Image (tube, rainbow, N blue to C red):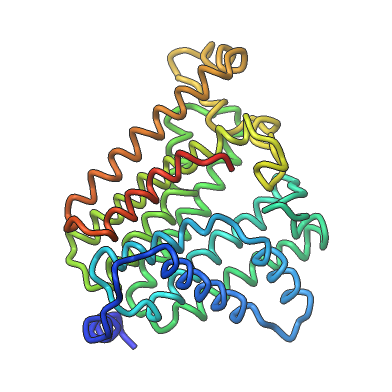
Length: 315
């Protein structure tokens, strides 16, 4: 089935009411079921480890973004969106399984990480399994796979740039933003574009909603890095302080013209947090401005709420 076929089905489906909390939660439950079903395997360890990390839950911001973008663009048949939303969350989940190998993280989403229970080799294979299951979910969606491919390539590039920056002690402001643009914001951008594309959006609308996702993705990662500095393991649901321990994250950004900035930030964490939050707020304001392409609806308001929830969170 081509994307055009899916768009036509979307346009002829029964309209849904304006998004309500219970209807969105019902849609997210359906996405959850898709994820659990697709990781079924005759290899018991892969199924068990995959369901372990999926069962730990999570914020599910990325599938929320896909669903809300689709609805805000006038989409009416959410069942067509569930596999795409599930695939995007599986990419993210696979990446955090691999992150815990690289960072030696032992807690993820309030549970022992896959790495902590099954060890590095099986954690690596579990992450690979989750990544490959994305192909299965996205096979019917034709050219939308191009959007997916661009995002997943960027994710790996971002993780690689981060590892290199830490190794070379080269965590400049420019490098930091390049890293988070690729490793985090690219998936959010894809979420906005995918939802808009499935709803039959025009190129201008698709690009605008991609920009919305991109900016909240940048804000999300900045806040994540701040919480890594200021939160505790119980609150965050993952091993806290790893970025600080390994010399990465917003707290370790330097200005090339002033290498003393890093030292001052280490001594003045409160200033670092304030600066980071200010940057994140600006990005969310830019994201909201991109929604001017949409009519003033409850679905658009829900996207704005999602954007602000990214910076008003404690975990």
